[in-house]
Length: 228
Image: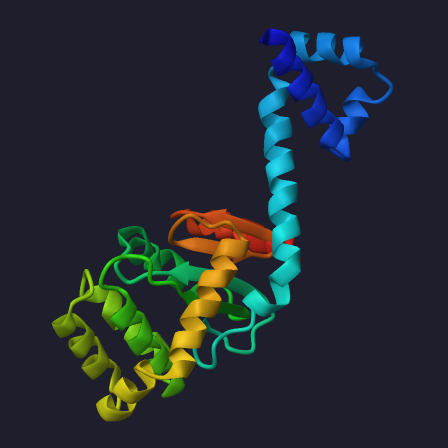
């Protein structure tokens, strides 16, 4: 069993590029085995590097598409060149709690464009997501986004209140919310999330990184800065 594990780890090492191979270049099977046994602390770092490389590869396949907002579904500067993508759900507590962090990033960076991808994965969230797309279509996305999160978990009454606060034309909004265009957008966002192997909300694309979960504004800013 132990030998099988060591062999698997050696195979994992062989699959790495860059620093991982550099550290073990020129070593045979037995030498690699001995090195791993004597230095087990490098394995988590190598695994993390491998996972990061895999995530970057997945993002590279769709990076331009995922950063292209549904018309109007943007916070901050719609013409900004620094782009943060947020996959969000109005029924998600951590999505709600992340709102101040995103607002702080926007306040600190006038060039920041936040592309919001509606990804309703919680029960009862899809109606709110559809109304958010209708708000985007009317140019009132930011107002609805903030008002909807202030309502707590989505409910028919809460969605109605958020729509009223945002000043939506309700007849037009309800028609758009039930349109094929809204359905297609939600399906697209689901496909993006699956390609990026996101497991929940909030999830982020910041620069060249994919990040899952609620993280500090500083972590997102660091990822954006590292992308140049």
